[in-house]
Length: 219
Image 1: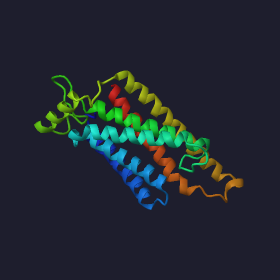
Image 2 (image 1 turned 135 degrees about the vertical axis):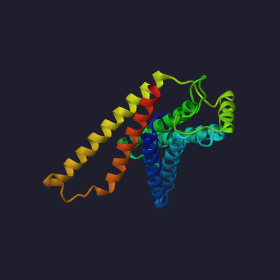
Image 3 (image 1 turned 135 degrees about the horizontal axis):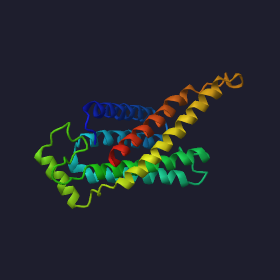
Image 4 (image 1 turned 120 degrees about the horizontal axis):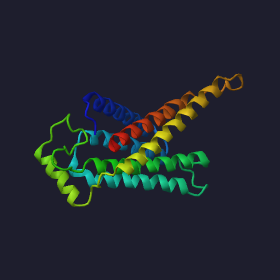
């Protein structure tokens, strides 16, 4: 996906750090829904990082199924009746769960698309130009493609994902700035919002990384 090693390492580091943070939150979760939500987020970041280096291509179908299951899980929460007190409570929570569901779908599409072998003269790895493929890995990816686990590269889809996540980045950033401004006003100085800031920051960073990765697909 990236032809500059420094960019690949930087994106990998961001994904793994975000995944580690979600894993830590999962460990500390007191409710089942929180545990599952954070676990899915952490796993998604790890799978995206693995995609950059074309790791475990033989498990491609399993990765897609896991992300599809995660997307369905967030949809269920988003449409659950109010008396079912899951993580997605209230309008804001339901919208956020819808966003998380779309993020899981986008991650599955990226993994399915970027792990597809290309025509002669192009590497099949998203990190082509940085890592050398083993023949066995290339064979596994090719076999997965024949089994229908991969999708054709679609610039239009990549552009759509770029616009979606770029817009999400701006929205999350505006919400974060508004929250900081509200906290600094005299009326709200007593109400600390610090516990929510890491999560908001992750939303901004995660959307920005997804937009960046989608843009490289469209290029």
